[in-house]
Structures are given as C-alpha cells and as structure tokens.
Image (cartoon, rainbow, N blue to C red):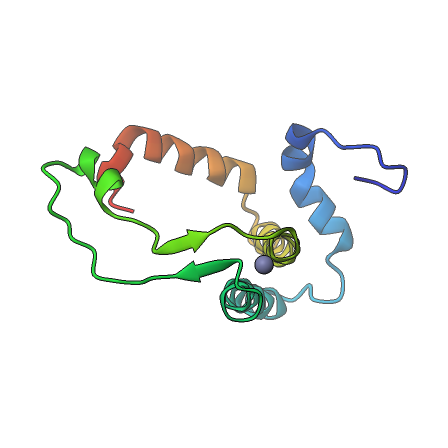
Length: 138
Ligand SMILES: [Zn+2]
C-alpha cells in the first residue's frame, strides 16, 4: 500500500521487484554487504519465530521424531508434520512479514548484483517442483 492507501497489483510488484530493489539498494550495494544482510535477516526471521513461541506464545513447537513409514512419497505429506501448534497473532505475523520482506529485498539485491532474474528463478523452481512433485525430496 502506498501513502494514499492505494493497493498495488501483486503481479506487477513481482515483475518489477528487482528494479525497485535496484533503485533503493544504495548503502549496502557491495555483494559482501548483501550476503551478510541476507544472513542477518535470515537470523531475524528465525528469531521472530522463536519470539512468537517464547515471548508471545501464540504458537508453540512440539518437535519429535518423524516416522517415514508411509507406503509412498505421495503419502508422506499426510505423515510428517511441521511440529507447529497454534496460529501467529497479528503482531507476530506483522513482525515476520517485515523480516521476510527485508530478506526478499536483499535476495533481489543479490540477483541484481549477479545479473540473475528472480522471477525467472522462481518460474524455473516452480516448473522443477511441478515436474518432480514430492520426488524433489524437499
Ligand atoms: Zn504472537
């Protein structure tokens, strides 16, 4: 949303995201800064999840051994779980969206620096996943 509360077209934002990053990534333009900022925001995303558990309490994590006893890979999705219980509250959701957005900004920055197209990468990954399905083993 902009200052006039006008929403942007999501498809246009995806297409133009790297140009947007290119205009505003000034201070940390070095690939060294971009790489370290990506690590910083990756840690901040993880920290925000942890704070949602330990400070807010809107979600909890009940980690335990995963049993891969499904008869096929297609059944795995029904057998394994995220170990996550609950749902993010609005405050934690906003915080995580902020950290993930910052991460995406620097992801766009590293793509610009290395002359890679983020949308092309997303499309190729989408196609690989569509082709391999659960056999991509992710
Ligand atoms: Zn919360």
